[in-house]
Image (cartoon, rainbow, N blue to C red; front, side):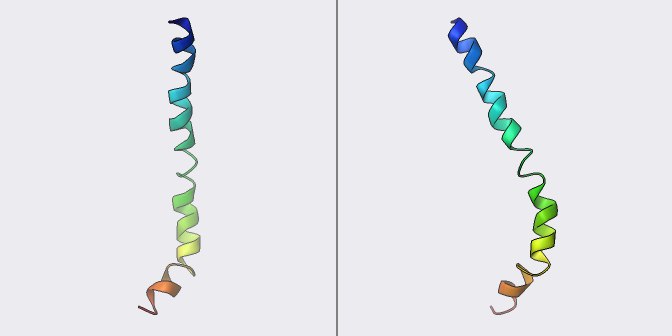
Length: 43
């Protein structure tokens, strides 16, 4: 049971990676400035 308790922190580790994508939205705007509009213009 104590071993599972140690694994519980592993779950929080997954959400901890969610913050990583958070910085992506701001970056998406930078990329979307020239990446999204570019591919969106052809179609």
